[in-house]
Image (cartoon, rainbow, N blue to C red; front, side):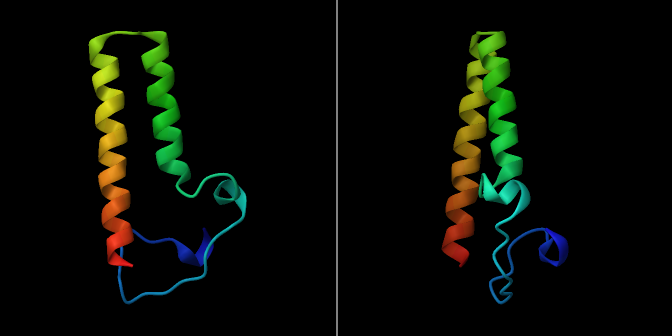
Length: 72
């Protein structure tokens, strides 16, 4: 990410869109990796706790993405 690294969303800050590296494959590679890992765990250990964890992760990420989009 180079100079585009930041934590949180600052509505007044405008940076160049990063499109290389992991961002060439996924817009949010950290969340994509978290979802893939949790999905893998759910498939390896198919029980109610693993399924609930997957659902919470997906819903939480969707809420975060919606909030990020509303700030831009």
